Length: 550
Image (cartoon, rainbow, N blue to C red; front, side, top):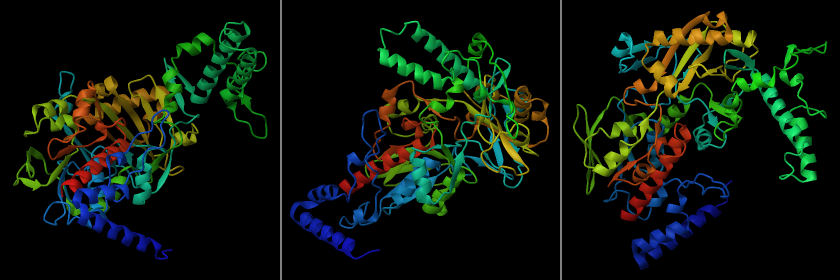
């Protein structure tokens, strides 16, 4: 409820600033605005928390009131104009945040759809891929192809980003934009690990690994091997911890137990446990380290979330705020020229576009190919990051057999096969049809699929998935779609790797009136959160400059 006090406070600050401006000029007034929190300062740029650091400075988005005493943001009283290259999450976030202060933004997108790598496929969509280069490419892959997606109603496939950690700024945008969320099951104890030709439930593998590790450490402690590191009290506390952690009991020997799971689940009867574990050497031979710690990383820790209905719900909400009329799809940039008073951007098949500023969010390896006058150092920096391969395959089944037969509700099976991960859907439980991510792979395994046609990818992935799930895996596949990100037009990579952080630093600064932004300019590469964080940084710096120079 507004009792009028906030209105009186605003008027008081405005009057104060007007007096300061009259007495000391624009510079003095801007400094006062910074002190009063009415203009962003360098200190308001988002900061990622680090060890020992406090909470990051809250982001202060630009607002129209910042210009109330300045006469506009582009000279002559008119809002500053900004050309945003790329309508992925970064570009849309830049336009959304600048739009809050009245900037006139136009987004140029070479593809026929917005969202960039935030790609959610549904029935009726198409996926066009570039031809696969190299001697390993099959004839159909070398020529390129277009897939026509035939998923049923309600089925969708997040071919790009698919999950959000609870600490990421992406969730703040979901809240602000009104995008509903649901839990993404990132790890499922009932899923499998498949390695060295052996399939084991995740809970069983974890129980065996924790049990044997605890037994070894407890026995080493009993034998005095750790006396140089532990006091008597420490030893007692450690042994008590290991007893629970590994379920090794007072005897300090791992013999299995109910943590491994049941052959017959308990109910009215007590159930039948799986029985004793395999030998220690067999457990070690499975090489389970990566598979048992997948969800231990900061970015992967449970619980994780996803937008209801697909990750592109975030893109749709951003476009709604920015205005669809500000986005020009099918518009390929062919040149960027920085001038003393503005920026000129050449486009394919049309007259050059001019604006006061430009924010380039295209993949760096593609921007490096665009002619311009940004300087050899900038071009070299753009060409430094290495685009990486990643791929995904969506397999829609006529029945959700994994829920019925395997009691699997979400999560992933981790494998040492080139399919990498097999994901089970975290939505649509108990409906008739459902979609499994038949592979999500990166690096060399993804490169193997890069040179295949879609049909060849499906054939190989179904055969390998059959090693995990048996013949059932190849039955009732009613539709499929796959994406090799190195072959996506105007993207040509899933994310990038930086061999030199010197180039990273160069692109953190604008080249004249051209700014650079993207997840590739953060320490959250490949996450939507990186796109949002980079957009906020550039918006803050550009707005600071406009207020200072305007």
